[in-house]
Image (cartoon, rainbow, N blue to C red; front, side):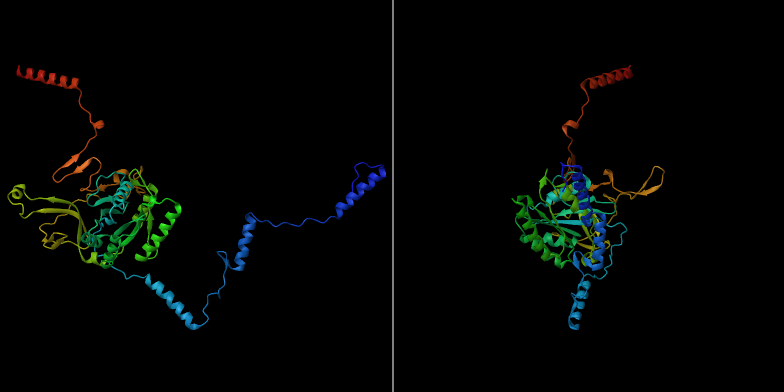
Length: 414
């Protein structure tokens, strides 16, 4: 030990010598391996690769090997059956038009489940326009190569049968607070007889639950029930609340992204039946004829996109709820909601592919539905102009104009 106060020079020298010898005899510190950092992670991955560890588990090729040849054959047959279920026979699309008609999207659900609000929210997202009362089909441009036609399905069995044949995509709305209702199961049974188009589920009224735990339990239960009715893995979207009479933007954006990218297979009924989803109806019967006889024969014009195969003259057509009729005349009109031009010119004059749509290209066509200030009636169209946008001529300028006109008239008379 070192003595801080040595009694003599000899003691001081001996104490310092002892301290030096003690340090030289002490053992060296052991090397501490690093437990973090780039080198540690690299060595850890190399060790896992040598041991055959995948996703935290050691790979053992003999772990799931069958003990007998009979079990091996069963496993192979099971795997082949699973792969074979994913294979579909190729179906040719018999619609010969180069420009396909808009994709028909049916919004189906029980009363007061949020069908109208969903259509308004989707149209607002695609076109940035507000709708009034939703009536009839609503066609809008959803992308560079895709147009969508939204229409609401009433809670009527006959209407469900007709819409199940026409729809390309079905948005099935489910009230999460109430659960599945009878109308949902009836429509699903009808779909099975018409070829079963694409179906997406939408859960609404999730904001009526009090706790987060109740919301998660409802989502889990309804998802399992929905998968049991459609197929395992069917898309199900959640709309948690309403803000300014619209669903939340992020949730609608997620839903619209899937609608814009979904692919369709041609169904047998559509490949063998030409059909028209009517956008607009016009009664061309003379009014004098109607006044004389209310039950006279009418001349009615139906406007819409032809879907399926070609429609021919002198062909019998069926109008749901009315009966069978003969086509009197067919005419090809300009597209009221055309697709935008994909190519655009640069400043240098070269053509370049368009990356996104401008506001002018986000078209909307809905003659039966009121768009903000435009209202459609049976025989007229009304445009409502707000008071703050109306400008009248000033009274002084009107008096000056009248005085000038009077003076010009007097000069002409003279």
